Image 1 (tube, rainbow, N blue to C red):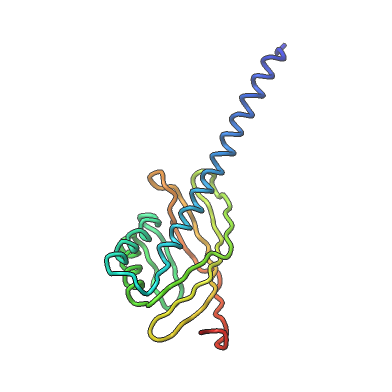
Image 2: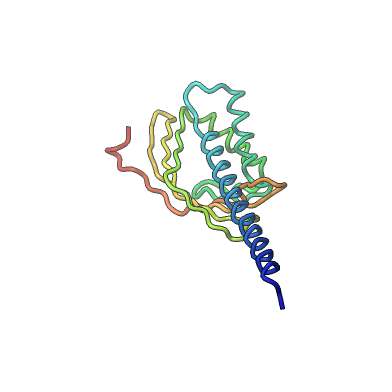
Length: 171
């Protein structure tokens, strides 16, 4: 017969292990949200950003992605399949536009494999100014996050919806 002390000890060990799993999942969620905030900050560009700062931001953006990501930006743009391509696209885009503002409107993370892989649905408001025109749009994406070398990085991006504001509301 198992003593009450043994059962109590097993219960305490079980609660501690459950707490560790619960709080480490929370830590992973915070890390993913921090990375998505970091990406948003790196994407934002004001008019007065220098060439070296843009190159640094392009590298920072690329480092938030897996070594071999699958990024499908949507027509007419081609897919991006490496960090190097991501860095080139980011640098070219940031140089070509006058300003860019990206704000996260909503994001939802679900675990596909706890502590290894997560799916994120994110909606962002984008205001871009370039080539004499200013556009405001809302985009929704599906992101797959994975752990690579101990860090949470984006393995894939798929657009799920884009909403362009009516002409009358653009400025």
